[in-house]
Image (cartoon, rainbow over all chains, first blue to last red; front, side, top):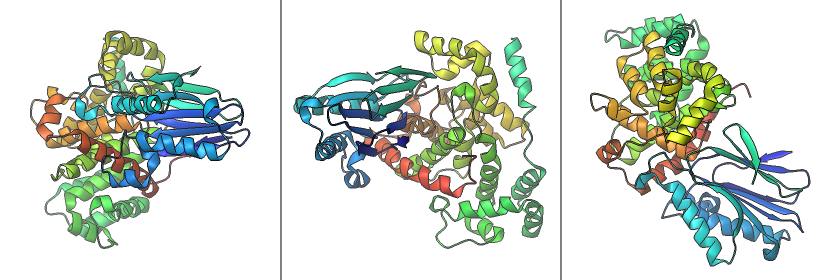
Length: 157
Length: 284
């Protein structure tokens, strides 16, 4: 059973048989987090790096990397996930063929994620970040398997 | 080039817009238009009038008080804007199908096209400028060439993709190299075939590479930026992804900064969901 995670949205679950999926990662960040022992899974799709005074971003933590990732991980802890077991995999943060500062949201999303993880003593187990390509990200709740579909092909992250 | 000629010939196989729509557009272009004639022309397809009014009554088309008939719509918005709503309603079913060549499921080209159209309008709002009345429709039509290129891209995708990846080309440049023609050019030829106004044709032809347009065109600038912002959100994305170039000249001309772009992205995600609910349902 697939559960779709939209843009600026997140889902945390330990329900057996669920596949969390998020489509259309352009410059957005997709982060999959999983505790293989408690089988708690989380998937978030962040549009922007930081709230930066944006009212809607303040209302919806999942919209931004700096607020959404901590919120998702905290929610996973309430379902029994433990920090030492977390497996984190990231995808997205694409950019245009030529990069202008005004349109460099993908790189900013990536930078904020890496800084956040470093600050909290966490690191990515795998990542498929950057470039110009589209990506769809799947997280299988039973196994923690993360698949990326891009350019008609699917591969394990 | 044989491929180029073959693809161009396929433009003429795309069904014309219905005679009801064509007559409605003709009447709306006439400064002496009689409202009775317009209502009579459109009543052959009652769904069209109903859908125009649904659009008119969404916030994005500026209606504060409810509009209940075509006459009020024309008085409120002007004939030109109503003609573009008519075109929007007519074109929506044409861009709702699956595009296997671009790996776009049913409705995703529609979502992508709505995103470009809305992002163009939202960019103008963010800059506090008035978007020309055809901006939304130009954005909606920007990617329409994909419906023709799609059938040829399916078999040639590997070549197009290898050029994009190995030579760092934009996607439409690689299409042009492999197929002899790209989706913006085909889109422009299709709109010409449909006898649509030159101000729409120009935007569709140049929206991927606006620096090639001989004259400055505000709608073209807005649709170019709209297409970039839509790429960034990923809405309706196909295999082409973000494999396109941004025109620095356009960005400087408009005076965009990073926070403006991010504001447009935030509003776009919200508005696309709302607007999809108003348009005729997709197959799903």
